[in-house]
Length: 141
Image (tube, rainbow, N blue to C red):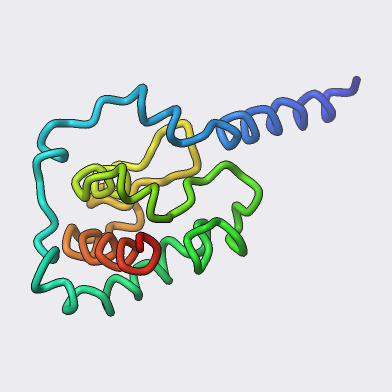
């Protein structure tokens, strides 16, 4: 095997193995700080209508490219990989603070990047909350 073939195999291994790890398996190994579990979405309840349009925009710009327009991974650039499907079952098992943590911090060892203040994408907390309202309304019913 030539040097180029070995390098290619190593690069493929480095890229493919983390992508094949299901995000749910990784996040169980990572402790979620209590502060995230305790926080509540400021747009839940009466003010959520205000958040929906902005949340739709954030999802379209930042999330749909991987998770797909329908939250099922279909049509996204990661189609075929083990992505969580955004549906009623997913959202019934996840608190808003947990989802906020996933978006803000990302999941190391997976393709889920960080969108928090220290990331290159730098979404505000306000935009993250609004995106959560949108995905719950759109995919969680």
